[in-house]
Amino acid sequence: MQGPFPALTHLSLCTRWPGLNESLASVPEEFLNGSAQRLQILRLDGIVFPRKWNLLLTAHHLVDLHLHDIPHSDDVSPEEMVTYLSVMPNLRHLAIGFLSALSRPHFPNPQNRPPPPLTYVFLPVLTSFSFYGVSEYAEDLLSRIDISLVNCVYMRFFDQFVFHTPRLHDFLSRAERLKVHNRATLRFRGGVVNFERNSMSLMLTIFCSEPDRQLSAMAQLCNSPLPPFSDLESLQIRDGEIGGSYWQDNMEHSRWLDLVGPFSSVKNLYLSRNIVPRVALALRELTGERVTEALPALQNLFLEGHRTSGPAHEAIMRFLTARWLSGYPVAVHSWDGRW
Image (cartoon, rainbow, N blue to C red; front, side):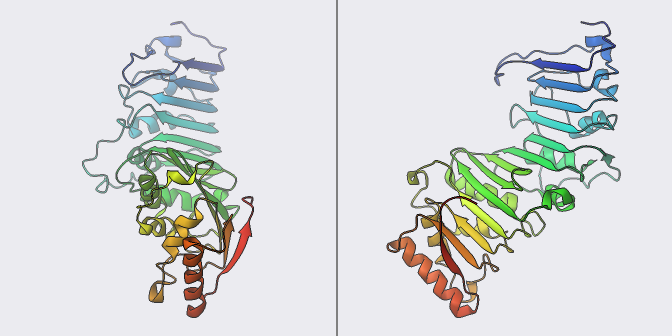
Protein backbone atom coordinates (compact mmCIF):
# COMPACT_ATOMS: atom_id res chain seq x y z
CA MET A 1 0.00 0.00 0.00
CA GLN A 2 2.81 2.40 -0.84
CA GLY A 3 1.03 3.66 -3.95
CA PRO A 4 -1.56 6.44 -4.07
CA PHE A 5 -5.23 5.84 -3.28
CA PRO A 6 -6.78 8.97 -4.78
CA ALA A 7 -10.39 8.02 -3.99
CA LEU A 8 -9.78 6.99 -0.36
CA THR A 9 -12.02 8.87 2.12
CA HIS A 10 -12.06 6.60 5.23
CA LEU A 11 -9.05 4.90 6.84
CA SER A 12 -8.86 2.97 10.13
CA LEU A 13 -5.76 1.15 11.41
CA CYS A 14 -5.92 -0.61 14.77
CA THR A 15 -3.66 -2.68 17.01
CA ARG A 16 -5.89 -4.73 19.29
CA TRP A 17 -5.27 -4.17 23.00
CA PRO A 18 -1.80 -2.61 22.72
CA GLY A 19 0.41 -3.06 25.76
CA LEU A 20 3.14 -0.85 27.12
CA ASN A 21 5.87 -3.43 26.48
CA GLU A 22 4.66 -4.78 23.16
CA SER A 23 6.09 -3.91 19.79
CA LEU A 24 3.41 -1.87 18.06
CA ALA A 25 2.54 -1.64 14.40
CA SER A 26 4.14 1.29 12.61
CA VAL A 27 3.24 3.16 9.45
CA PRO A 28 6.09 3.90 7.01
CA GLU A 29 6.38 7.33 5.44
CA GLU A 30 5.70 5.76 2.03
CA PHE A 31 2.28 4.47 3.11
CA LEU A 32 -0.32 5.64 0.56
CA ASN A 33 2.54 7.44 -1.17
CA GLY A 34 2.48 9.87 1.76
CA SER A 35 -0.65 11.57 0.53
CA ALA A 36 -4.43 11.16 0.76
CA GLN A 37 -5.96 14.30 -0.67
CA ARG A 38 -9.59 13.19 -0.30
CA LEU A 39 -9.25 11.57 3.13
CA GLN A 40 -12.09 12.66 5.44
CA ILE A 41 -11.97 10.20 8.36
CA LEU A 42 -8.75 8.84 9.87
CA ARG A 43 -8.54 6.59 12.94
CA LEU A 44 -5.28 5.20 14.32
CA ASP A 45 -5.37 2.97 17.44
CA GLY A 46 -2.00 2.03 18.92
CA ILE A 47 -0.20 2.86 15.69
CA VAL A 48 3.25 4.42 15.48
CA PHE A 49 3.34 7.03 12.71
CA PRO A 50 6.26 9.12 11.39
CA ARG A 51 7.22 12.26 13.28
CA LYS A 52 6.61 14.37 10.20
CA TRP A 53 4.01 12.46 8.25
CA ASN A 54 3.15 13.97 4.89
CA LEU A 55 -0.15 12.10 4.84
CA LEU A 56 -1.39 14.21 7.77
CA LEU A 57 0.21 17.36 6.39
CA THR A 58 -1.78 16.98 3.17
CA ALA A 59 -5.11 15.91 4.73
CA HIS A 60 -6.80 19.24 4.03
CA HIS A 61 -10.29 17.72 3.78
CA LEU A 62 -10.10 15.74 7.01
CA VAL A 63 -13.33 15.92 9.03
CA ASP A 64 -12.72 13.32 11.76
CA LEU A 65 -9.29 12.65 13.29
CA HIS A 66 -8.94 10.00 16.01
CA LEU A 67 -5.46 9.24 17.33
CA HIS A 68 -5.86 6.73 20.17
CA ASP A 69 -3.25 4.90 22.28
CA ILE A 70 -0.37 6.91 20.84
CA PRO A 71 2.71 5.05 22.14
CA HIS A 72 5.47 6.82 24.03
CA SER A 73 7.93 5.80 21.33
CA ASP A 74 6.07 8.09 18.96
CA ASP A 75 6.28 11.04 21.36
CA VAL A 76 4.52 13.61 19.19
CA SER A 77 5.03 16.98 20.84
CA PRO A 78 2.16 19.48 21.20
CA GLU A 79 3.94 21.76 18.72
CA GLU A 80 4.14 18.96 16.15
CA MET A 81 0.50 18.05 16.76
CA VAL A 82 -0.55 21.64 16.11
CA THR A 83 1.45 21.64 12.88
CA TYR A 84 -0.76 18.81 11.66
CA LEU A 85 -3.95 20.51 12.83
CA SER A 86 -3.06 23.77 11.11
CA VAL A 87 -3.77 22.23 7.68
CA MET A 88 -7.20 20.86 8.66
CA PRO A 89 -9.70 23.75 8.49
CA ASN A 90 -12.62 21.33 7.95
CA LEU A 91 -11.99 19.30 11.11
CA ARG A 92 -15.16 18.69 13.12
CA HIS A 93 -14.17 15.89 15.54
CA LEU A 94 -10.75 15.59 17.15
CA ALA A 95 -9.61 12.87 19.59
CA ILE A 96 -6.06 12.58 20.91
CA GLY A 97 -5.13 9.86 23.41
CA PHE A 98 -1.86 8.41 24.69
CA LEU A 99 -1.05 4.88 25.76
CA SER A 100 0.83 5.90 28.92
CA ALA A 101 1.63 8.86 31.13
CA LEU A 102 5.18 8.97 29.74
CA SER A 103 4.11 11.20 26.86
CA ARG A 104 4.38 14.76 28.14
CA PRO A 105 6.11 18.03 27.26
CA HIS A 106 9.60 18.27 28.70
CA PHE A 107 9.10 20.95 31.33
CA PRO A 108 11.33 20.66 34.43
CA ASN A 109 8.56 22.16 36.53
CA PRO A 110 4.94 22.13 35.28
CA GLN A 111 4.27 25.44 37.05
CA ASN A 112 7.17 27.17 35.27
CA ARG A 113 6.04 26.64 31.71
CA PRO A 114 6.94 29.05 28.94
CA PRO A 115 4.29 31.62 28.01
CA PRO A 116 1.73 30.56 25.41
CA PRO A 117 2.53 31.24 21.75
CA LEU A 118 1.48 34.58 20.31
CA THR A 119 -0.51 32.94 17.51
CA TYR A 120 -3.23 30.30 17.71
CA VAL A 121 -4.39 27.71 15.25
CA PHE A 122 -8.12 28.27 14.85
CA LEU A 123 -10.32 25.27 14.07
CA PRO A 124 -13.48 27.07 12.97
CA VAL A 125 -15.89 24.13 12.58
CA LEU A 126 -14.65 21.83 15.36
CA THR A 127 -17.59 20.62 17.46
CA SER A 128 -16.06 17.90 19.68
CA PHE A 129 -12.67 17.52 21.31
CA SER A 130 -11.42 14.49 23.26
CA PHE A 131 -8.11 14.14 25.06
CA TYR A 132 -6.55 11.35 27.12
CA GLY A 133 -3.13 11.90 28.64
CA VAL A 134 -1.36 14.06 31.22
CA SER A 135 -2.47 17.57 32.07
CA GLU A 136 0.87 19.12 31.04
CA TYR A 137 0.37 17.97 27.46
CA ALA A 138 -3.22 19.23 27.40
CA GLU A 139 -2.10 22.59 28.79
CA ASP A 140 0.56 23.03 26.12
CA LEU A 141 -1.80 21.90 23.36
CA LEU A 142 -4.63 24.21 24.45
CA SER A 143 -2.22 27.15 24.55
CA ARG A 144 -1.67 26.70 20.81
CA ILE A 145 -5.19 26.12 19.45
CA ASP A 146 -8.47 28.00 19.55
CA ILE A 147 -11.39 25.60 19.87
CA SER A 148 -13.75 27.87 21.77
CA LEU A 149 -16.66 26.98 19.47
CA VAL A 150 -16.81 23.30 20.49
CA ASN A 151 -19.93 21.97 22.24
CA CYS A 152 -18.55 18.62 23.48
CA VAL A 153 -15.30 18.28 25.46
CA TYR A 154 -14.01 15.07 27.05
CA MET A 155 -10.76 15.42 29.02
CA ARG A 156 -9.38 12.26 30.62
CA PHE A 157 -6.20 12.42 32.67
CA PHE A 158 -3.79 9.89 34.08
CA ASP A 159 -3.29 10.23 37.82
CA GLN A 160 -0.49 12.60 38.74
CA PHE A 161 0.65 14.30 41.91
CA VAL A 162 -0.06 17.89 40.80
CA PHE A 163 -2.81 19.19 38.52
CA HIS A 164 -1.97 22.76 37.51
CA THR A 165 -4.34 23.63 34.67
CA PRO A 166 -4.83 27.41 34.26
CA ARG A 167 -4.99 27.18 30.46
CA LEU A 168 -7.65 24.48 30.62
CA HIS A 169 -9.70 26.71 32.92
CA ASP A 170 -9.21 29.67 30.59
CA PHE A 171 -10.36 27.61 27.62
CA LEU A 172 -13.44 26.37 29.45
CA SER A 173 -14.31 29.92 30.51
CA ARG A 174 -14.30 30.96 26.82
CA ALA A 175 -16.31 27.99 25.54
CA GLU A 176 -19.76 29.55 25.73
CA ARG A 177 -21.51 26.53 24.22
CA LEU A 178 -20.58 24.46 27.28
CA LYS A 179 -22.52 26.77 29.61
CA VAL A 180 -26.04 26.10 28.38
CA HIS A 181 -27.13 24.44 31.63
CA ASN A 182 -26.17 25.28 35.19
CA ARG A 183 -25.97 21.83 36.79
CA ALA A 184 -23.28 19.18 37.02
CA THR A 185 -22.39 15.81 38.54
CA LEU A 186 -19.32 14.59 40.40
CA ARG A 187 -19.28 10.81 40.08
CA PHE A 188 -16.94 8.33 41.79
CA ARG A 189 -16.63 4.87 40.25
CA GLY A 190 -13.86 2.65 41.53
CA GLY A 191 -10.66 3.89 39.90
CA VAL A 192 -12.34 6.79 38.09
CA VAL A 193 -13.78 10.13 39.17
CA ASN A 194 -15.79 12.24 36.69
CA PHE A 195 -17.01 15.80 36.52
CA GLU A 196 -19.92 15.96 34.07
CA ARG A 197 -21.73 19.08 32.99
CA ASN A 198 -24.60 19.64 30.58
CA SER A 199 -25.53 15.98 30.12
CA MET A 200 -21.90 15.09 29.47
CA SER A 201 -21.22 17.85 26.93
CA LEU A 202 -18.28 18.49 29.26
CA MET A 203 -16.59 15.61 31.05
CA LEU A 204 -13.37 15.79 33.08
CA THR A 205 -12.11 12.38 34.19
CA ILE A 206 -9.18 11.33 36.37
CA PHE A 207 -8.03 7.71 36.54
CA CYS A 208 -6.75 6.88 40.03
CA SER A 209 -7.50 3.99 42.36
CA GLU A 210 -7.19 5.48 45.85
CA PRO A 211 -10.30 7.30 47.16
CA ASP A 212 -8.31 10.05 48.90
CA ARG A 213 -6.32 10.63 45.71
CA GLN A 214 -9.55 10.94 43.76
CA LEU A 215 -10.74 13.66 46.10
CA SER A 216 -7.52 15.67 46.10
CA ALA A 217 -6.94 15.27 42.35
CA MET A 218 -10.44 16.40 41.38
CA ALA A 219 -10.28 19.24 43.90
CA GLN A 220 -7.09 20.47 42.20
CA LEU A 221 -8.66 20.17 38.75
CA CYS A 222 -11.76 22.14 39.80
CA ASN A 223 -9.91 24.69 41.92
CA SER A 224 -10.44 27.80 39.83
CA PRO A 225 -12.63 30.90 40.08
CA LEU A 226 -13.42 30.54 36.36
CA PRO A 227 -16.39 28.69 34.85
CA PRO A 228 -17.49 25.94 34.47
CA PHE A 229 -17.18 25.52 38.23
CA SER A 230 -18.13 28.90 39.69
CA ASP A 231 -21.39 29.46 37.80
CA LEU A 232 -23.21 26.24 38.67
CA GLU A 233 -26.45 26.34 40.65
CA SER A 234 -27.01 22.59 41.12
CA LEU A 235 -24.41 19.93 41.88
CA GLN A 236 -24.86 16.25 42.67
CA ILE A 237 -22.12 14.07 44.15
CA ARG A 238 -22.55 10.37 43.49
CA ASP A 239 -20.53 7.22 44.03
CA GLY A 240 -22.07 5.03 41.32
CA GLU A 241 -22.70 1.48 42.49
CA ILE A 242 -19.86 1.42 45.01
CA GLY A 243 -20.65 0.35 48.54
CA GLY A 244 -19.91 2.36 51.62
CA SER A 245 -16.78 0.32 52.40
CA TYR A 246 -15.09 2.02 49.45
CA TRP A 247 -14.57 5.15 51.52
CA GLN A 248 -11.96 5.08 54.25
CA ASP A 249 -13.21 6.00 57.70
CA ASN A 250 -9.95 7.75 58.57
CA MET A 251 -10.09 10.05 55.54
CA GLU A 252 -9.65 13.71 56.48
CA HIS A 253 -12.90 15.65 56.37
CA SER A 254 -11.09 18.66 54.94
CA ARG A 255 -10.63 16.75 51.66
CA TRP A 256 -14.37 16.92 51.07
CA LEU A 257 -14.38 20.64 51.84
CA ASP A 258 -11.58 21.09 49.31
CA LEU A 259 -13.67 19.24 46.75
CA VAL A 260 -16.80 21.40 47.11
CA GLY A 261 -14.86 24.61 47.69
CA PRO A 262 -14.68 25.72 44.01
CA PHE A 263 -18.48 25.54 43.64
CA SER A 264 -19.19 28.89 45.25
CA SER A 265 -22.45 29.55 43.37
CA VAL A 266 -24.15 26.20 44.06
CA LYS A 267 -27.61 26.66 45.56
CA ASN A 268 -28.75 23.02 45.39
CA LEU A 269 -26.48 20.19 46.56
CA TYR A 270 -27.50 16.55 45.99
CA LEU A 271 -25.71 13.76 47.87
CA SER A 272 -26.12 10.06 47.11
CA ARG A 273 -26.57 7.51 49.89
CA ASN A 274 -22.93 6.66 50.60
CA ILE A 275 -21.73 10.22 50.11
CA VAL A 276 -24.10 11.70 52.73
CA PRO A 277 -22.17 10.68 55.88
CA ARG A 278 -18.81 11.74 54.37
CA VAL A 279 -19.89 15.23 53.37
CA ALA A 280 -22.03 15.64 56.49
CA LEU A 281 -19.05 15.15 58.80
CA ALA A 282 -17.09 17.67 56.72
CA LEU A 283 -19.86 20.30 56.83
CA ARG A 284 -20.06 19.88 60.60
CA GLU A 285 -16.69 21.64 60.86
CA LEU A 286 -18.10 24.82 59.29
CA THR A 287 -19.10 26.83 62.35
CA GLY A 288 -18.68 30.39 63.48
CA GLU A 289 -16.85 32.57 60.97
CA ARG A 290 -16.18 29.55 58.75
CA VAL A 291 -19.86 28.72 58.21
CA THR A 292 -19.89 30.13 54.65
CA GLU A 293 -16.31 29.19 53.85
CA ALA A 294 -17.60 26.43 51.55
CA LEU A 295 -20.83 26.53 49.53
CA PRO A 296 -21.70 30.12 50.56
CA ALA A 297 -24.73 30.25 48.23
CA LEU A 298 -26.21 26.92 49.37
CA GLN A 299 -29.98 27.02 49.94
CA ASN A 300 -31.14 23.40 49.56
CA LEU A 301 -29.52 20.13 50.60
CA PHE A 302 -30.95 16.97 49.00
CA LEU A 303 -30.06 13.70 50.75
CA GLU A 304 -30.63 10.17 49.47
CA GLY A 305 -31.58 7.58 52.08
CA HIS A 306 -30.79 9.89 54.99
CA ARG A 307 -31.79 8.69 58.46
CA THR A 308 -32.99 11.06 61.14
CA SER A 309 -30.59 9.62 63.70
CA GLY A 310 -26.93 8.77 63.98
CA PRO A 311 -23.67 10.70 63.51
CA ALA A 312 -24.52 11.90 59.98
CA HIS A 313 -27.85 13.36 61.09
CA GLU A 314 -26.26 15.06 64.08
CA ALA A 315 -23.58 16.54 61.82
CA ILE A 316 -26.18 17.85 59.37
CA MET A 317 -28.22 19.43 62.18
CA ARG A 318 -25.13 21.14 63.55
CA PHE A 319 -24.37 22.58 60.10
CA LEU A 320 -27.98 23.70 59.58
CA THR A 321 -28.04 25.42 62.96
CA ALA A 322 -24.79 27.26 62.24
CA ARG A 323 -26.09 28.44 58.85
CA TRP A 324 -29.42 29.59 60.36
CA LEU A 325 -27.67 31.55 63.11
CA SER A 326 -25.42 33.22 60.52
CA GLY A 327 -28.38 34.37 58.43
CA TYR A 328 -27.77 31.90 55.57
CA PRO A 329 -30.38 29.16 56.21
CA VAL A 330 -30.36 25.86 54.33
CA ALA A 331 -33.36 23.58 53.83
CA VAL A 332 -33.03 19.77 53.81
CA HIS A 333 -34.99 17.55 51.41
CA SER A 334 -35.29 13.83 50.77
CA TRP A 335 -33.88 12.76 47.40
CA ASP A 336 -34.70 9.68 45.31
CA GLY A 337 -31.40 9.72 43.41
CA ARG A 338 -32.77 11.26 40.19
CA TRP A 339 -32.30 14.74 38.77
